[in-house]
Length: 507
Ligand code: ME8
Figure 1: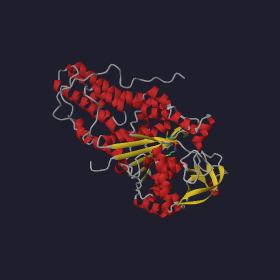
Figure 2: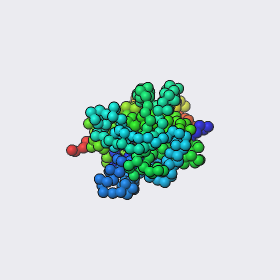
Figure 3: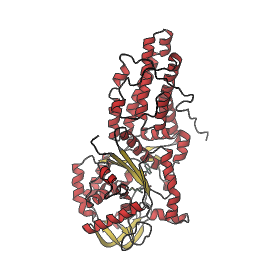
Figure 4: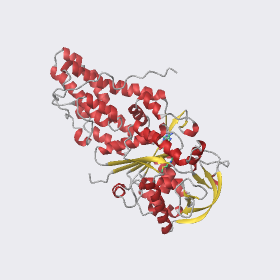
């Protein structure tokens, strides 16, 4: 491919506690995209942990630990979350690593040299939970104006460094107008344009009275948000690294919608101040809600992602998260919802299809894939399915992609119900029996390819049951040609169903 490699990032998560399912959501979405793009060429996924700032320092202090000891103790859990959900990142950056802190200081020096950073006095409020500076006029009833937070804020009167953000306002507005798709979904785009039209203040970028952060020449530490945003380039060894040269600008940066302002106003301005291009696309996805509220640690309504994976299987949770709602929308989640989709879409539709297709093949043809029929209705109907699913994925339409894949699941199940292979067998109509059996197996091969980014383990199991070596891989544009499954392939139906039924919680 002539295009540059696909580079996707997730936010780096605050290491102020254990991960919850909301954190898994973004990382899984990034992994699905990366796995898809890897079928077509080189791809690189970055994730990591945001380890500085007051919020992390307070969590460490509450646990009676020094911040570094606290983050060292927790980072394994965050990596384990990725492992549990088979999120195969290419790099995991911690903002306490030297490769990062060194580059952060370099950014500061360059911005200063350029005249985009100046010394001033910050007199105003600070919300530790959101790690955000708020001017007096913005507060709501004297509290953090973020409706999701509304916590008490802290008064700051500090001599700090400022970034000349206001200088970039016109360029930002022009960029938004010229690139109407660079921030998605549209709701976020419109909100950010409105923010820009309302005017921009310069941004305080240091904390002179804190010591948990990247130390700046002359004292104080870098403001945690600027420190954090820079991870997307420090991990690539900006300024001179080969990775940086080949991967930047990122093709997609995934974030939750609550951090859109940092990523779509501050971040591009900082990049421009460094003479770097903005990323191609920032996608601000919706929130997972529980009992009507955003799932978050501070609300105490979190789901433990390790428990969910133990109960439903990591692949089923991955499927649920991306099938339940369009990526830009909020959606509510709960065990019962996951269970119903598991038993329905996965168990009844997909799992049963695998089982009955391969069981009939075993019974009537000793498990050997027959000759492909001269023509296949199903093959003709799905001829462009791979391309359609690819297009949905490129537009981050995960749900649309899965719905398109389920057209094939449905078509195969209906074909079995209508053509009744058991009757064909009884009536010794071998040619017709071979035709439906072949279509089912070939359809399963397609499904394994199409589902591999979403459910890597289950897709690999389907592949093995089909008697194929390795795992489903390769460019769909080549692999998804109807008739690709070789006649004579010895299939191996597993004894266990692919998605064993899960009973309701006894509680
Ligand atoms: O904001 N639904 O870190 P964070 C969907 N360190 N996604 C959710 C979610 C939910 N209920 N809860 C969390 C920070 N997320 C900063 C980011 S980046 C330079 C610095 C996901 O630990 C979602 O991706 O608060 C959200 O943006 C992120 O976790 C916030 O993680």
